[in-house]
Image (cartoon, rainbow, N blue to C red; front, side, top):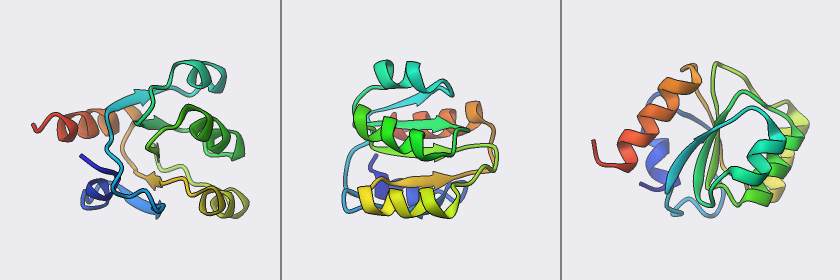
Length: 112
């Protein structure tokens, strides 16, 4: 499953889809503690979180996440949204709880 494939899922609203929309999502990763995400988020993951700020973008870039999924109806502010576009980080929003969002992505990755 690619980042572009995630845009086809009605539960996920694309906020910014970067130039790497064809990038494969390899795993899901759920974490709201940035220091843990910085060291443990797997490369190519869809990082599901409720942390919608500039630091989240920095950690996603550092960890080389395929995309960020903001769960529980949280949103980036305008400054962070501009930064996501500048850094070409794909970001989605969903009203789903973190677990349900991660499970949906996991099932898509694994062809379920």
